[in-house]
Image (tube, rainbow over all chains, first blue to last red; front, side):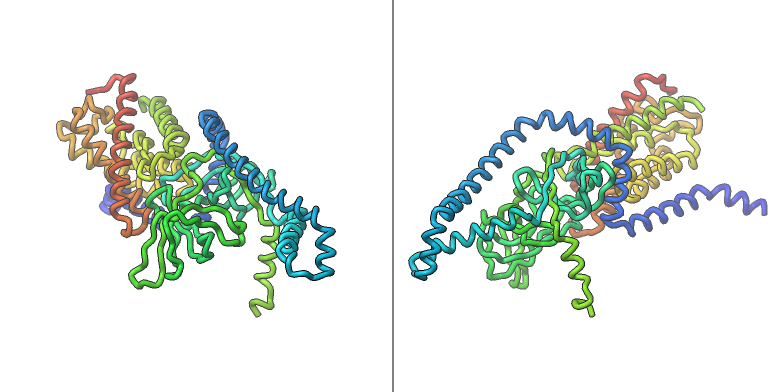
Length: 304
Length: 172
């Protein structure tokens, strides 16, 4: 008996170590990006204020660059808006003649009526828009892990909730919200091994899967691209309309592409349009219809 | 228990620097120095084995909590804490480590101290980064991360050790 106690006394540290290590490995093996986001959300409630203060200092030094980028983005939006304004003016000036033209049903006015139709179709969606946006400041951000999260200074009280899309200030994809607390939101960055979304070549419409291989914080991969797609360097890659992301959000530009061994699919390297390492502000986008679509997907008629 | 206050300060400072500075660096995917190991590596030589294990658990858990890594840090710090007495024994055979004092350049000699840091940091980083990657597909990249972050960690821990022993009279 004494010898047994003596034996336990001499080896209990080893036993304890093996036990603790085994428990930890077991716990780690079961973790997913959701449990990690949950943990990070809890921690942010404690250290969030500190991060926020530091983020304030950092963002002060980035103000100039950020201002420039915002101006550039505002200019590009202005340009796009101008196109619509021209269309709108054309449309209102030609409404009366068009009515007449429609009565005459002459083929010559076909092009104009098409344009009028396009402006009209934009109108209703502007009034009751599907997407709601709000801005947020990034208070913590990493790029050096295999799963990277951003912490934003908006939470449930700002009506932020899970699965909102997160875009950079120049309108490019950054990630989506995976968890929220009262004051903060945790975003799964596109630079995460578990991040998946679909992307397409904007001009040809061929689509594939967007994912990160952990190699470079400036590029992601566009896999499963059809062999007929023939991606060329410089081609723009945008989102396909998915549950989280609106259609046509910029992802980046193709750097290069190679055919897989089987010769059936391309994998393209895509240079991200958003600079993940220097984000200080982001735009949150909510799809108002997401619940309705979810309900529909769950409906008994689809899964009898 | 002597020097309990300096050690609490060391713990708090390394954790804060880790959380607010190093975990927020968006420089490169290869650069992730872990200064928080300094607390574990600078504990007195006569710390009981079980105490080292507890310290490893606490530092690892604190980092897991703040980094949101679900056990990854504990997984890497526990073996370092557990194996520390043997690693020290390997480099420091002059006399019985039981008599106390801090692992430091003044006590071990500069070269031996740095070797001690390298071995411990390497052990930690190998576990940390390979478990984080969880695949051998990117083995070369994981290796590069271990090396780059390891060099940075050893440097910062060495710097911390210098600052820490500057104020304390080291028993050589």
